[in-house]
Length: 128
Image 1 (cartoon, one colour):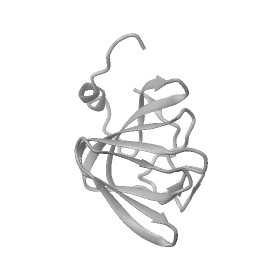
Image 2 (cartoon, rainbow, N blue to C red):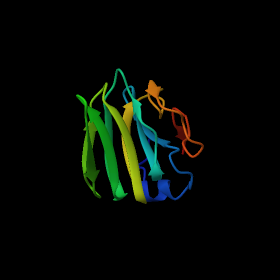
Image 3 (cartoon, helix red, strand yellow):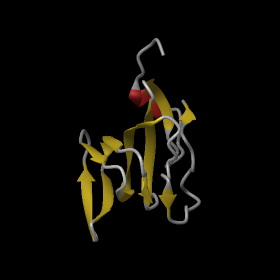
C-alpha cells in the first residue's frame, strides 16, 4: 500500500457484521476492520495474542481465565489485548466498529471454538 487509508471511508464500503476487511499489512500481521453487533462466538487463539481497538461504539470481551469469567468493556478509543490461549467472546449490544491486529491467515474463530452461528463469518479476512 502506497497511499493513506481513511478508516471511516473504508468502513463505509461494507455492511456485513463479524466479517473483517484487511485494511493493511504490517510485517506478517493484518490490520483488520470490522463492524460488529450481537455476540460473536467463544473461541481461543492458541498461538497468538489478539489486539482490539474500538473506533466507534462499545465492545465487550468476555474472558474465561483460570476457572473464572469476567468482561472487559472497551469504549471508543480504548484498546485491549487478549493473551494467546485465553478463551474469549466479543460482543456489542448496540454495535461497534473495531480495528484488530492478527497474524496473516488467522481465522476469525480462532483455533478452537464452540459452534459458529450463521451471523459469524469464518474467514482470514476479506480485501477492502
